[in-house]
Length: 206
Image (spheres, rainbow, N blue to C red):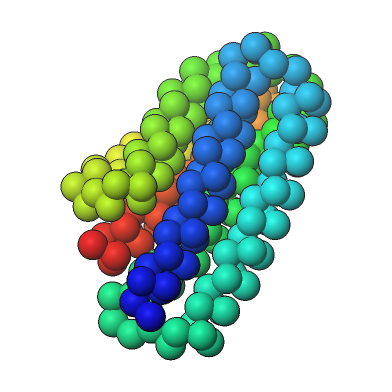
């Protein structure tokens, strides 16, 4: 029975690994669009497809966890692992939705060439690294790496809050730039929060 349960849990890890790879691709697509390397509308189409795949994958994980719970009635560490994997899968689903929100914002505002987006780029790079390291921590069961991810969150929070305070003080003269930067930084902050949540689940499994 234990061997069968282990095999089922490994299949969940495999499904989550596929979703992890896709999440990173979507995140990189957003950053490349900031940098002017990609067309925003093409990026949005790609991310919408990716977000649908992540949603389907999460539904599969959720149903699989339900089946495992009914069939094996796991306890202790195995039960905790299943709950954590379900939470991680949900985190990946949310990552896909927030990258879609960013892509929609880029399409909506069309051209940010007159805006200072250096803060966006820096924050996006930090956020991407957080997601990458959090997912690596899942793959390796690496608690130390998970703690590193959690420690990086303040940088993203500070980037968002400091820009927002600057807007309130009237430091950003362009309304378009102010709104676009604020929206995207907020979405990046939410992505970072989900990276932290994934890292916390790694610690619970370890």
